Amino acid sequence: MIRSARIAPGARRVHELRIQLPASCAESGNAVDVFWRQRKGPWQAERLPGLEAAASGFRPRRLSACLHPADLASASLPMPPLARPLLLKAARQAVAARSLNALEELLVAHGPRSEDGRMDLAWTSRQTARQQAQRLRHLGLSLRALLPPHGRPDLAAGRTVWVDGWALRPVGPQHLDILPPGHPSAGQEAAPGSAFAVAHWHFPLKALTPQSSSRWPRIAAGWAAAALALSLLAVHLDTRRLAARGQALKHDMTQRVKTAFPDMGMVLDPLRQASQQIEARRDGSADAIGDDLFSLIQAAAPVLDIAQGQIQTLAYQPGTLTLTWRDGARPAEARLAALREQASNQRITLTAEQDSLVITAQPAPMESSP
Image 1 (cartoon, rainbow, N blue to C red):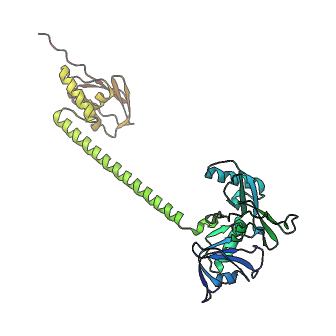
Image 2 (spheres, rainbow, N blue to C red):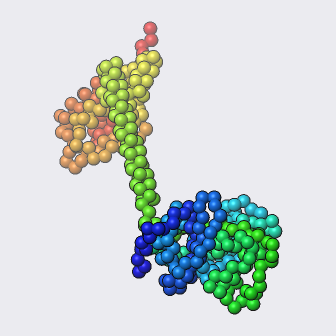
Image 3 (cartoon, rainbow, N blue to C red):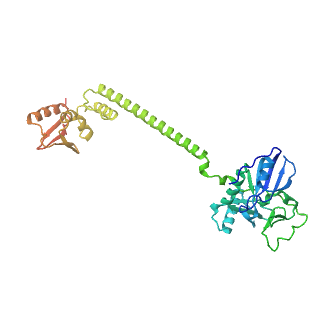
């Protein structure tokens, strides 16, 4: 494990420090190129004996690093003129077609689309990028941007730059050929007089952050769950309050109907029963009992109260309500006679069968002609 390098008392304070990283497979102590500048000043270049020297010799406000050519793949491909989100999608699809690794295992960076319709692409594995970022972190350096070799400031002159035998040769103002050691064209110099625009595009470092190391998604999910729970509680309380108000309103209506119509035995639907009573009084048939289920149950309420716990089934056919007694629960004849007399007061007729009681409505009395 690499120990954190101590910052020397004479470490230079610089606005930005850019390090050319050694290959991920290289041992510690290899010489590295570093570039530094003050705010809006020109880039200065130095060669240091290793990353430890860079960590102890500078105190940058912003640290960026260029991946080693051996740690990435690159290509310059023609791209259609698309909006930025679609252009990024097209770039990722082009990389997926050229890489043996799954696209989810790669970090992809791309430059701008040039006038000739081509765009430089670079891709590397997440594991390699994470390893290089951890190497700098162990030295006390916090990486702000990870760039491809296109971001080396010394490429601005348009000349070929060598990195451990790899040739970085500018081709025009925006394209860069990266040639491995021993390549037949590696010894050719770049065309003279062609300046190169140093790349500012970089790999997405946020993609390297493990999901478990960030607590903000969990905090956001917790707040969302708490808000949902409070919303459900508020809805539940509102429902209970509305239900209580509904019951209180129904109770008040029932009491008003009983007060207005004292002869009404049972009030199940205050509004409907009150309307029926009013219509019956208007028609002059207030003493008549309807033969529908609702009217028969309302009229037979006193009988049902007396026979509570003794009825097995309750069946209705048009104009007839039939009660079936439980085994051994049929009342005696004297009791049945009392029920018939009470039912007569309610304008209904009781007919006792062997094991049942049939309830029918009495016809309305005929008005005598004058």
